[in-house]
Amino acid sequence: MPETVTVFGADECQGNAVAAALLQNGNFTVRAVVQELTSPPAQHLQTRGADSVLVDYNNPASIDSALMGAHKCFVITHTDFDNEDALGTEIQQGYRIADICKKHNIRQVVLSGAHHVHRKYSLPARHMDAKACINDYMNEIDLPKTEIIVPFYFENFLTTFKPSPAGNNTYKIAIPMGEAAMDGISIKQIGPIVTALFKNPQRWIGKSCFLSADRLRIQEYAQILTHHLYPKQFKDSRISVKEFVEVFGGPGAQDLGNMFEFWKRGGQKMNSALSLELYPELQPFQQWVSANSTLLRTALDN
Image (cartoon, rainbow, N blue to C red; front, side, top):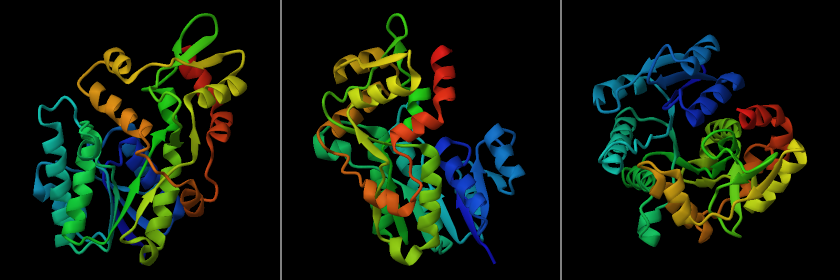
């Protein structure tokens, strides 16, 4: 009998990649936790054979029904920067999921975790600090857990960190890393990696896996984009963290700025060799850009 895996956040990018990879593998029954049954990601997963379920993260009974009868689960929590207590709310939701996993004797939990940024450098990065606290709690209650820590998504160049126009066919990348290298990975490659972790629980339970497909300076990301998307040309804007926070704006800007500052100070410590072992078809940035050049051109032209 295939094992049932409850995938939280299945209508968001990372959870969706995990659910899709588990379905493609064919050895798992996927229970996809979504916020809206009629959303395109939820419907796409349903057509591929997933059982989509709605969950209210503030309602323990709702989480309970999503985990009842499941063998394993993938946990990712969402940071709502518009919430006055974004940190506390996310931590509470993660603790709630952890307690109910324990209640149902889930055999393996794969958690998308993060580093303690505030604890290490006194820089609040709520989207990371919350996940680090949830990981600590799962350890405290002895859940059979594997943690993954993911770096910058390559797909961010299509959306949140899309290079901005700076003159005729010239674009600037406004990521405040200075001369420090930044790890990255494609979201879609996280799915097969998590699938590999679920297929070999004896090896991976109790471990933290620091994922990376490439490690480049911003100028090197720019050079690769220029090579594949010429005549468009890309440059590092050389923006500081302070300038980034001002330009990015919004309630999560300082958190993201502090994340980059943490990475600049060497906080990532990712492991591309381990990532390649878990997924031998892992694509470095150059391969990803080559495969997605049409998508990138379209995003830039819009």
